[in-house]
Image (cartoon, rainbow, N blue to C red):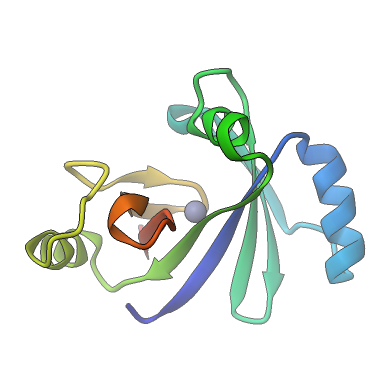
Length: 132
Ligand code: ZN
């Protein structure tokens, strides 16, 4: 793990969350993107080297919709930058962590990603990502 790449925050309404985070961080999001495979719409803010990713569900069966239903709005995941998602996934699997996807997949922000189940990371959904 080389650094924290971003922190994902689940929100009910991206437009109003964008306003709140623009006021909080003193700058607007630098991009907004829809990831159809995940059923999410995202916007990204830069805070130094780290990004804040706001996530809104685009359909009821989206993982974000389910998360908000269960736990409400809030921190959804922490993403770590790695050199190689497949190599990191193999190392983590070997160490006993539960990977969510059998293979890396395409995420927002031109990344190759995978997730580690929160049951093996003290309750925190953990993402590993690399630039595509
Ligand atoms: Zn993420």
